[in-house]
Length: 436
Image 1 (cartoon, rainbow, N blue to C red):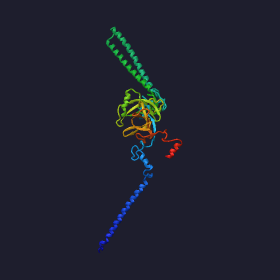
Image 2 (cartoon, one colour; image 1 turned 60 degrees about the vertical axis):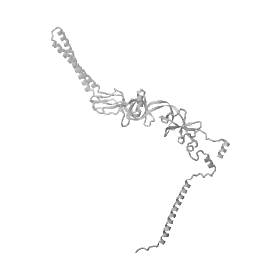
Image 3 (cartoon, rainbow, N blue to C red; image 1 turned 45 degrees about the horizontal axis):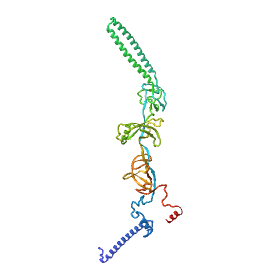
Image 4 (cartoon, one colour; image 1 turned 45 degrees about the vertical axis):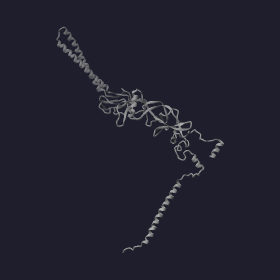
């Protein structure tokens, strides 16, 4: 069954009512947005009440320099801004060392493993673990009896052959006398002379054998090859020892003098080579892990002949006497090598030097009118708390060290010891403050 069709005059009022509702909703939304905007403006408006036209506030705004435009002169730290309290320091001269800081490793100047040169039973030990020994000091004794017997045997053989040589020489002299009397054949004389030479060679061999036997007997006294500190003992008495033992009897490490190996960046190698070529002695100081205490003082010793391609550095070595035994092998230390000394350098505190887009600069104080000026400078060497100004500053000029973040070129400043400007005394000052 089809729905009834309504006449056209009944649908027109319904469409008009729908359009009115949409317009009313849009108007309400616009009014709400305006109300929210006014509320936001009210909450964020300045606390100062608007000045009446021609009032004191308006007159002050007209009289204030740059008050309308807010330009550079009216900005923070500008000429029209209140004076800023700053700290100052005077540029002075000092001799500053140019140093190279590096991480170094202590290495022994010499290390020797004490090994016996002959095999035998270890009979005695003449050292204690950790003892300081000198080169040539007897450290152990090997049973010498077999070597004494070998020496006696070599000596006996030599003496027997020497007796035969003496008899052969006497016979040769007799043969030569008979030959001069034409009583003997020349062949017998020549044969006897050859026998004498043979026995002389045998004697030389016997003497060498005797010397080897005597040398082996001396090797039964195991001596320290270098001066240093003995490590832990590796073998005990009663053991069979020999020259093929890998660990030996003990290890001696030389502690005085002692070396520190460190790395020099390849960019600083030319300056170091120049100082070495001039024959200068470069002082070196070994510092502890915190760089607060000097362990030992020494001098530069040697520079390697090639650059490490992985690190871009060159190995170097400094030598220390280590008289107090404060350096120990394989110890990590901070090494400070003094390359040269800059005489009469202009120095300012590190806080006075600032960096901008055009480079380094400082604020120089004009003591006459209490204003500051920007001065471009060239940075030089630095110490812990001061930095060298190579160019741009003279000795005696004052620079700003504190409060420079609020300054501009030409800004007015006050020093901590200055009195506030406009401060009057007595009754007149009180009246001025009340009027203000």
